[in-house]
Image 1 (cartoon, rainbow, N blue to C red):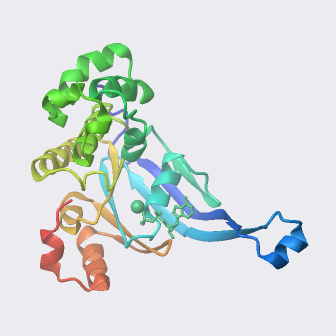
Image 2 (image 1 turned 90 degrees about the horizontal axis):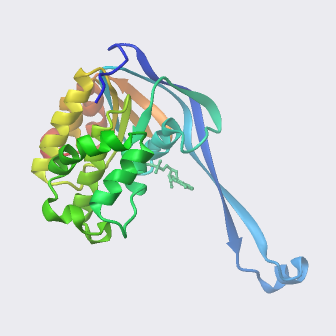
Length: 263
Ligand SMILES: Nc1ncnc2c1ncn2[C@@H]1O[C@H](COP(=O)(O)OP(=O)(O)O)[C@@H](O)[C@H]1O
Ligand SMILES: [Mg+2]
């Protein structure tokens, strides 16, 4: 599809003093005492989780930002706010281009329909025309390498097959900004290799990419910059070697173990 309209080095995403708080309402089972007090309605209890706290970050066109951090660090929350799925509680996010989020596309698939039908629907949802989808269908199907399963309902797909098709659609759409939130971890080694080649291709075509992954070896190899989140805060941000080393030490894992891990 079209070449990027952006120039490498231009700002793609700017995250300023970003805060996000989730508020969940929990229904408590009424006790006898509270039932008397509230006439049997029970009590509502709210729980708040501060998922992001004063995060400052930017991403340039022509580069890949890696995001690392333990489970619950706030990585997916940050991706949801950048994608526009969730509004920030504090601060702001400016996005200078069209974002495609791998998870969002994957979630849009209808399990009862075939892979083929979902490619058409997913392409339309991502703003492709019917002709563009038809022109690129073979390319998408070949890349996903699903064989005859492309005509089977997606509910019969393994998570790896599902991820392969989602990634193929996402990269073929050629978004300005592509966010991949741990969506490649279920693919096999061959697919991961191909995916990394695609990511490099998009980077050299002046797209901006954000890659959330626990595969520290890959993060180190492919990213221009890495951000480390912990408990909703940005702990460190800088060149991949420095940040991955610091994060590995924090995890107390040997460097060799981290490098052996794949995407
Ligand atoms: N929809 C939600 N409602 C309430 N809390 C949430 C929701 N999603 C995530 N959280 C909480 O926000 C924090 C950050 O989660 P998340 O962004 O998913 O972290 P990560 O992707 O780094 O594992 C965690 O404490 C998690 O339990
Ligand atoms: Mg996550």
